[in-house]
Image (cartoon, rainbow, N blue to C red):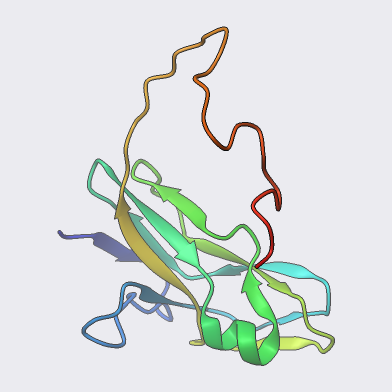
Length: 143
């Protein structure tokens, strides 16, 4: 599968896999920003993409940023639809207690390309019975 990418600025980096078996392509910041504790920020990547029909790009957090700095993608996973042609931005949130400094060229998130399924919606008056029923939010226990 091919993904078409346009660099919108000179400093933009083309997303790339760090290792042969990686699921996600690294996304890079094109400018420095400070994210205060408890705050979020839209970090530009300086790229736009063209996805094949029937696919989406999911923007996901980087585990190292989450573990070491409590930085994650706020709307995780962020969805980029195949029809979107604008700049990819990553909404980062700082769950930590210290200001986090994003620097130009930093790996800020990963982008996973995935197939999508379109559903046909049918409105009904009742749903079929299951063993679980309406149990949710911890209804199966904690152990």
